[in-house]
Length: 356
Ligand SMILES: *Cc1c(COP(=O)(O)O)cnc(C)c1O
Image (cartoon, rainbow, N blue to C red):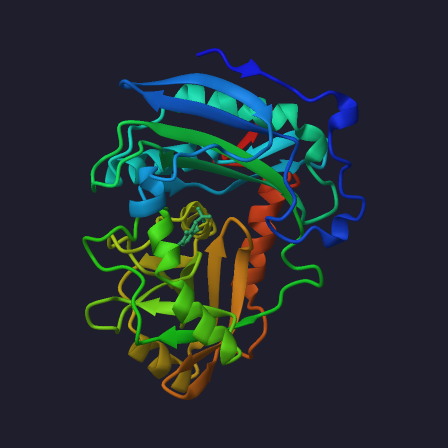
């Protein structure tokens, strides 16, 4: 499918941010976006257009019943000046799995990937160069049919917006304090927790607000049934290191199958670490801490890559993880993954794609 382009003239483009140390996250957008429509059974009209508001019928199904899916990935300026992306195919494959769960027609993988590369190439001057910065890419599909009856939409819009984002850790790693949530649940088995779809995030806002008010950065979700097994954090999968074993929850259906999670598992195996995907209860974490065996905990996700956890708050007490500082494995994984992403380290798994 050809992609048509309607580009702004150079003098109507926005100025690029001049201080790359103050980019923040998700507030600055590139000059152009990609759009493609679905109706009458086919994806059509792939186009790159100036970034701007969408026109939607107020009855569009996405606005009422949340038939939507999104993705999050990054493009980097490599150490050689080239433009690189990290496992973009894995993001599109996950998007299609999310689409299936939300009754949204799948995207043609190869073409959608080509269109993504085309958009990144068009906007390559927006990729920041300061260490730790990148271009964040947000592919999204929304149900556009105007109808107030609950149903599967017959038409959709797939669009991609992008913008430069800052270093997640301007002063290096800062271990976060997380709050173990027992009143609310994020997702139950059989629900939509494993799909990257808007409702999961709306469902988590109140718990996050309450945790912030108590001074915690993130909520740690337990399983919806027994409220014992550790699931994940708001936008990150969780790993614990207990007595030399690196542990993460298996993909039970209520957990988002993170690409960073998968990359961390692969790297740990490659390094010969003892890594297991198994059920881990909050009680086991507490017992391990009391026995002095809980050495590290960290979250994984595209935005932060690795986010060390310094303490976990459960039923009124703070459980300190290790010495409360960034652990050795967390640091090694951060350096390993970002090194591969920027082309500083060898990429034995073929994860990095050179776009330009
Ligand atoms: C996106 C996301 C993650 C992390 O996935 P990555 O592919 O590693 O970025 C983890 N949990 C939730 C709920 C997410 O939405």
